[in-house]
Image (cartoon, rainbow, N blue to C red; front, side):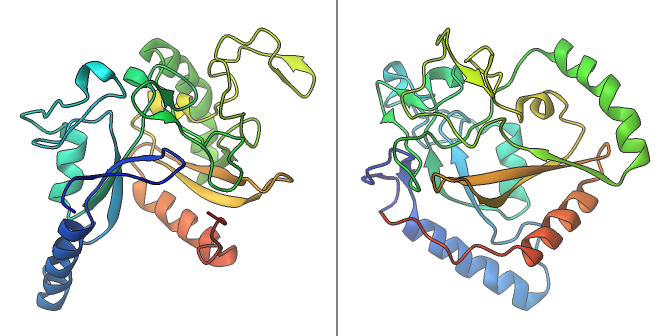
Length: 244
């Protein structure tokens, strides 16, 4: 099933690589036994269909690139692979990542498996200038505290057919721009020097998983991992599965 196209109903995955991933996992196991495991040895990762991976179909969510195979891999993804991470699937993206929800003519509408009327959460990248302005306010906070905890979104989720141009979109009765104003991850995408982990925090009244962000000091990845791991130990939920 190398590079097999996905067939699940929620349109979250584009291609899956179970056989190759299993073989790579066996190689990772051997490295652990030999004592030369890399920092992310054997960790499974899902790579968004927006990030080029050499030789693998990368569509950017567009019909224009439905059969495109890049001849190089994005540097960020190369670093993941170099550290031992294993790509077991590709995830969908709105066309050229230009939306707050994931839907496209190529892949359809991505739906939250816990409640298919809603969209799964995603990130969006804004202007570098705005990121710099945000960091000016954030830096003093991070100097006083080990990490900052905040939600991933301002609402549990939006409908799967959410309109980015909806003029009547509101949060707690207040009208806000429907494009990305409800997404609370994008400021940290702009501040790449601050490590951030997004982890499950529970479920909404509609049965949709909610999340929180652990934001760390500049380049202090270790403290973020430690805080995220401690929360997952205190609030485990990995045994829960949606009824697909």
